[in-house]
Length: 290
Image (tube, rainbow, N blue to C red):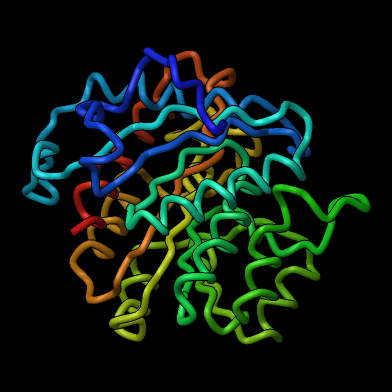
């Protein structure tokens, strides 16, 4: 069982359709077992849901209303606390089910390692998969202090799985020297510091490609998103990330799924991080699903 079938808590605004009648499924992955600095992102999905209640159902960016999208909020997965390997296996199994049922997945993290099993599942269905990765951190380590299952490794794992030439990273401003060397030598695309401008230049090259998009909230400057596990100064604004989301929505790429990760509510008593994240999820939901 992946979820508490008797769950009656908060759902993302207007996300109360049944699974069967929905085209899109939002689900939480409350895992933060491998974080290297500040834990707490396991509380992110529910806080994003709570913050969404303050949103309007209409988006002026996309000129769409949430009533136009049939979506279901499944709640948070029941992941075994402290067991990263089993949690990853469960996420991949659930993703296999969503894709077999023809659902568009929107995952809420949780630490960034939760994107790894989603990408593995995606590749089973889409052989031509490309990845757009929006983040402050390169996440290209092979391991962290001897542990290959780490929130600092998912993009390296993705490169090794689908080929680095199919991975496009934006907003990167932190990582080991070796990570930046790998990005340069491997053939993957990495845009440092900025997101919207380089993304708009790359999108035409991905025309028609089935693409998975993973967004780490720490791509924002801590002034806009202090509630994250590894905040990194020098980031982009909320406005720039909204611009990037809209650019993807109006492009010719075929988004097949997405996630937003690393919201850690304990470090933001103003809730501005969760409030921003909920708006980004609304725009992803309205802009990236057809």
